[in-house]
Image (cartoon, rainbow, N blue to C red; front, side, top):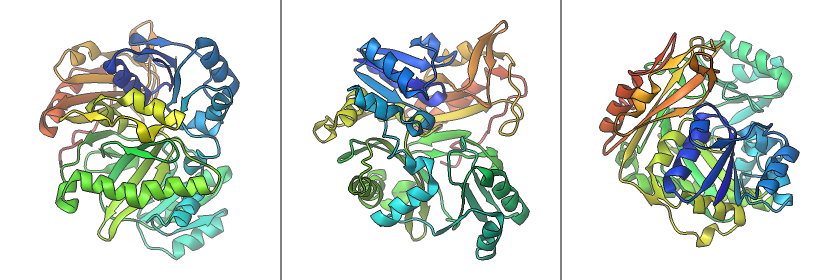
Length: 419
């Protein structure tokens, strides 16, 4: 299969790595990064341009286009590809609003009867203050639109909550939400708009520092599977089945009934509260860094499932085959992240890290410069360890991380420690 993967981060590198591992595919990435271009052909173009992406896909004769990040989805790239007759894994612009607008997602949840926390939508600072007056800390505020993983704040500090609202109100409404207490779980669901195929659950770490301290980030690490789910639900599969029946399928049906059918990857961001599983957010694409630990556990069937979702035939697709393994990823971030990351610094030791058994280094923000591999953004690398157990996978990830050098680099030391 000839496959074009759009994106330039570690999520896309993980998707590409999974497709390469299956074998039998010819893969191109656009625009890719320094790590991705070591694995597959890359093409430089603006992936938010429906016209440019469609031209590349049609002239290149691709059998499938996989859209990684959210921005091209919100820009309508999937719509243009569908009009051109190119199978595309990723929802339409209208359906991608489930991520592009938090208030839209809440409306969908209400229609579908999906369990979630209560919320208030505010368009002015006075409205935000009134909503904060009516709630108790910790305060949860979310920018309504896309904010590159930085639009959410959870804080006990009233002043910090108001400052967050002031920062994002010029770009659109703010949602003030109920704080939901409990562990977070991410569950990815492949769907063709009618049928669904759930993947394995994962848990990520949003805070910058050990012990869940410091500012929120796009994610500093993740692990899969989640053995503690069995204590609550009897088995991890029982948890997955519950989420499919109470969250994923009702949401997919509500989207279809509203005339905005959703086909692609529905990311269910969940909280396991004392009163049950509740949704904190939906995304319209694979999550980062959870993708980096879920996909290495798939043995076969990944590409076929993506194509079936794109063609509306998921109901007759063969099930995925899973490895009996575990995966842990640790993110190496630049100095200054998530505020003002320092870029341009050299990265060394990646080859030594990847020489270790059960290790893969996925590139998030890297480039090639005069001094070799360099950091070009905030989250730079994902060091992924796989093994028979979480303990083995974790040991391998941190052993590999210790071989990599980036001046001022930041990484948590407690990813998956509690699991």
